[in-house]
Length: 281
Image 1 (tube, rainbow, N blue to C red):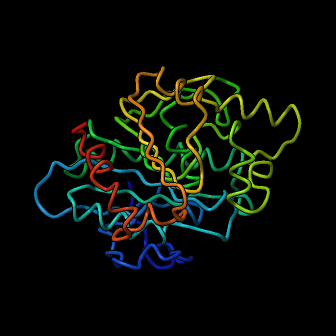
Image 2: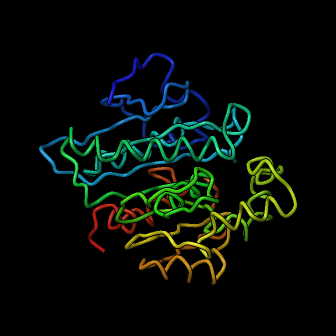
């Protein structure tokens, strides 16, 4: 693992108000998983000796370059850092800068390889790793814990070992929820991300659907706002992989409230999220 020069690397796009109640702390390290400009993650460590649970955080942005990066998830990472959770706030390529299918998946897969290295170098409890995704970041949070065959976006891969996942207003099965997700983005997001249309796009969606392969997790928590609860069969499919699945719905709440420490919606659900992160549920 190498520590990158921090200049120009930490997220610099909008925080969408997620910093209204807490300023982001300076990362303890900025770690590279790939040589391209967005191939880094911000590591934040709590005070004390540890060992600490670890949250791997993936931002949203409708998979379109120029909308979002790690900046708006940094206040949440800082809040969890203060609560005793180590965090890796991951950036990645999107449509327009080399991402989409397969580039974004390649980045997520490479970023996941940092987990073992971070756990070996810092006071991290490898058995308490949670994959966290807001909005479009829900896809890597669930996909990484899923084994894939040759038809997957990066070919054959084993599931990343993680205890749990937390989805913050994101889809459980993007193929089944594409219309709702495009409506949330207010533009066509899913099609350009797949880079295909028609049957070829359907085949790609099927390859990453939990109905085809369930993520290998003990617990999955959805905290929804603008998006409804995932379809019942998607929840059942995720549960079929062995996960206890919970859904906390917040109709009428803003898309970013649930990721904003200090917001009443976030505060309502923080205990449940911390219980997942700490592995106490």
